[in-house]
Image 1: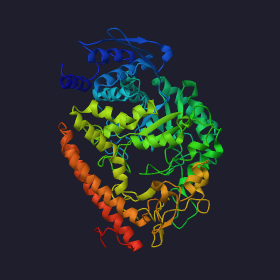
Image 2: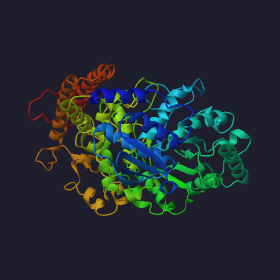
Image 3: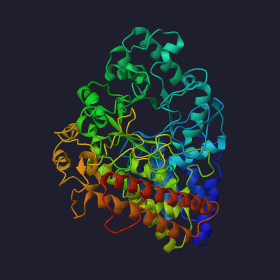
Length: 613
């Protein structure tokens, strides 16, 4: 069979649902390998519970032996198929996932909307109830399992009515949903409302109140009876007007531990988000610095959390901006299990309209942080009801890559991307390479035409898409660039807000000196005048101009490269439509940002390019 015909056959297999009677990962693994290798080499799937989620692939005389635990065998089957389909070397030997919880956090609301969702409405909620096609949810489980994702939290961390009823009247529906994911090694997780006892007859949500503790213990027993393999609860507390323990004068450790003890008998994890800061800041206040918030709150609590509490920390100290340093909390919590929170939904990186492959950003994060400091990993979903599930067909590369990075944080982003390209499109080798190169450079291109040198929050406040350099400057969210006619940026050194002091050496010294601070973080850590001379000899203002002109030119070149690819329909048309929008977005970012800084600085572009007055 020709390579193209084989690939088409496998794609048809992927598009069909795994038979419903296959209700265990081991059974699915046997089915998948039999379907793929029919008429070819023999694959034996063997259960070895000692390997757990790990697997071993052994080459035999006539094919391969895949052995592993119940889910490990499934992951091994998929790894074997991926390698064969991509024409890569078979990963023989023992492979084990680095992170125990490899989570997708969905921000779906039960009315069918998805907060910060760019791929359509919810795939499983509508009209304040569960509403889905079972076959499609099994396909979802299959897709997640194929890259080793093992936990799926289905509802928004901002828990809106009637999502609270997932713990009571809607629990049977949640259990039915969990059953559809279970054969693919995917366990359900639920976001909960910290104040939920008060909606059920308890007059308080004080975590030290025995009535509250009893209510949560009874609730946990009921929930785990319905869903015995539930992974746990996800909590957003005392953040952005959400209720939490601070309301009662309690610490976050006291609040988290109360919930953790209720679910501990069932092996549940309590995932507690560290996204807590003053969201009512006065812009006149130049002392309060939002990036300091998480470290200041949680560092004194290190070691105070129960063992089944997982502190989920956003990878940077702000909120998924185009460029941020690694959160210092990862270096300051040595006794507390932590999960790194990444974002697949492109809230500040193009709304799944503009191209932004995230693999290179994750590689930088893991290289700097040191993977040993994080025990679990999560990502905010980019899924929706759109036909391609991720809005932009190329945004699926991020979901695919997250699974492989969650399995192995030493993954190479380009290797992962090239495998996705081969598995997704049957393109000639030259075109495969062109698409991979295009996606690999997409993050740098987006950064060039949007956020200069580590500045954040220059987007439109109402939807976080498109340029608005002063859009957040007088808002309550602590998101300021402090640009004026003299300088731009925030001084976060010891002489400023002191934020840099939260980092250990050598990062502290690296960031504190503008001569050693990486250019792409320069204005995050320093307030500099427009004539500041960069390492390459250009002035700060000229670098801002040059980056924005370059980014726009690069976006236009990407559009030309994309038009030359023989993509199948409907991906070809959808990608072209979104690329046209991206080019327009890049031009707007270029002109708005350059004009903004030209008006402040009064300095003309050294190359005489058009900047609007």
